[in-house]
Image 1 (tube, helix red, strand yellow):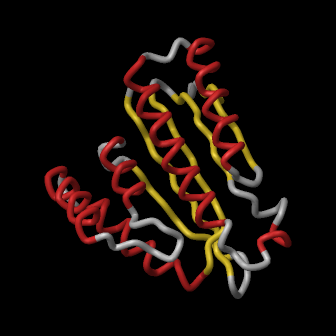
Image 2 (cartoon, one colour):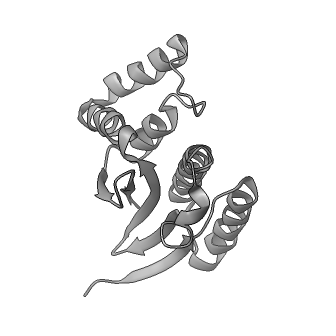
Length: 171
């Protein structure tokens, strides 16, 4: 039988204050669930990287207000049968789906050394997007999760899709 414990279950707009609140919540849950230090460090790093990505990206979306609350970003952390599952979701412009899909497929299929090289190369070349990111957060999350992640895009309307990412961490 599947044993599931919800550690964090958040749906709503993401701001710097939200990130602070969720970090505090994770710290509190660390004590309550008796999280060991290594999974806790991995989860908190992924939490920060993922929510900063969501915050930076969604703040640039035109007409973002009309999406709320139906397409608000989501962030969950669950303990499932000895593993941790982290789920992240946010609206994304359809025009950005192809590039993000390509980037994540590349990241997913690189070995550890290639992933490290891509991280360093991205920093050196300063290949930053209009949102200020270079995909470093995704590379960092993939390295932490040892590339145990899946993702998909669900169509919302003619302009938007919803990006979902599931990261699995072994204890």
